[in-house]
Length: 173
Image 1 (cartoon, helix red, strand yellow):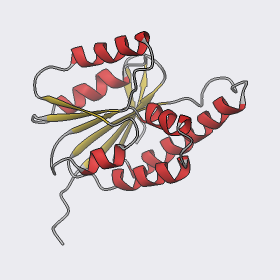
Image 2 (cartoon, rainbow, N blue to C red):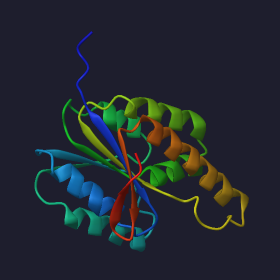
Image 3 (cartoon, rainbow, N blue to C red):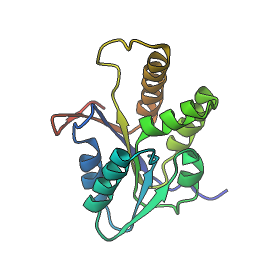
Image 4 (tube, one colour):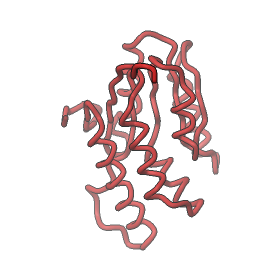
């Protein structure tokens, strides 16, 4: 069995428009190129298409974008050792699995397992959704609960956890 390539996992978490993605991009680009950007968003409408275009426009040369709305584990495992990776974002990936009516707990366990073995500098973006009001419907409550559990699983295997607040990173772990 080959030696495990040393790596680190950084979770960048925060609320909507807190600066998570931009900060994670800054962290990733502090590592030597080429960088991999694993995108989990799906384009269901024009507004989402615009958001995706904005994210893409911020990234310059040296980035390879991999779309993985569902098979995030496979996308991560296919990357070469040592490559800096930015995964954006876990809550969209979770949404995709919930809408597809997949076994969310099994998917989350599988993702946490692969993230526990980083083979390079890996940066993961996720939304903190548990600090607001209790959602008024069952699906939203299920999502909030599943996102909270997923974020805890990923934080537990992360070397560093940063909480973004008004564009500022606060080191949690």
